Length: 113
Image 1 (cartoon, helix red, strand yellow):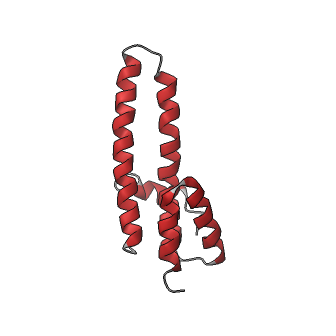
Image 2 (cartoon, rainbow, N blue to C red):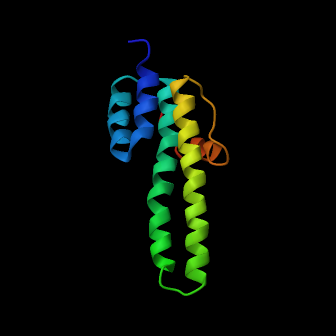
């Protein structure tokens, strides 16, 4: 199927379980665009899982906890925008990096081919 890479790219952004499904699909039909978006989506999912953990660590510290959780909430909003951009790039079949973290994802997870 011609759009398999695009489908894999889209599924990889949906949830972490979706990323796993997309990775399994990719192993059976490797495409450049699929690998590109698997790498980016993985970093987005990892960051999205780490933010609440960091927030919980600071939750019970007065003032600093409030400030850190405000920063984490803002980071969550920015991460949502990055996720949405990645999803749009995948839907359009573009290998375009997500701002700030896209290039890093390509370097960190370069083993996903």
